Image (cartoon, rainbow, N blue to C red; front, top):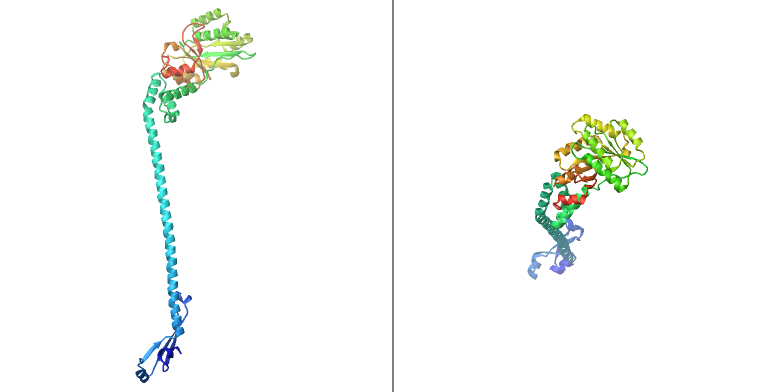
Length: 390
């Protein structure tokens, strides 16, 4: 009917063909129908209609129209989907680029800040360098060992970056020196028990005079009952010197030669508070002499004795090192420094304290008995090391 409507009532249907969609679109499109129709020549000539014409059935045409419509709609939808996906991808890429850019910016700012802080710290260090160098030179000038000077300065290095004031730097160094010198320890009396105190050290350091000064201080200031012994039988002058001091102070004094005699004297003076024992000022290089002192000291239980190594502040540092190492093989000890009045340098006090880790105790600064002796003043020592109180 459609062919006749299109070509006239004389149209003859020649062929009907169903056309199915191909490819992926077959899932979304309907099949179409193609109709081929013709009319007789005579009729065509009479009616002025062409000899042959291909007509598409209305329904087929409509179907084709639908197909064309569906194709356009699908194409539009696909393009929209692709465009939307592309836009979303572009948006994500843009956000990622912005985030990367922001991260790079933050990292750069952080690095710049760190560089500024390092630069500022370097400026502060450079600003403090002359002060630090001045302190370093002063300590070394007072014969403090360079390794201990560097140790102190390195321990307070961080504080240099916070304050450029030389007063604060000096205060920190001063406090550090006092802490390293420690709290001096002197003879303390025991309740209802006799304490035996040995004095050891090389010749010529003033050991005998120091013992007399301590004995006087204990008796006059602490009201202690004091006895004195001496094993220094090598020097008659030393025995007589100690005897003279004992007579002046009114304290008993005895000469001992062996370990057994020290135990006898201990029994004799068992009611006394303290027994001060002078040993021979023997060479630290002589092994036999050191053995004699070691036997004498170890004849008394460790809990009942104290040992003081007497050193001269005027002795060269290298010699002091050998002396303290030698006596360290014998026993533990506390440190007494004599003759501070004969030197302007107190660096050796600090050096030996650091080397041995032994407690400081007394110091002497003259020949007067019972005067010119006292507990080492760590504050005064620190001030002298830093150039004060010259």
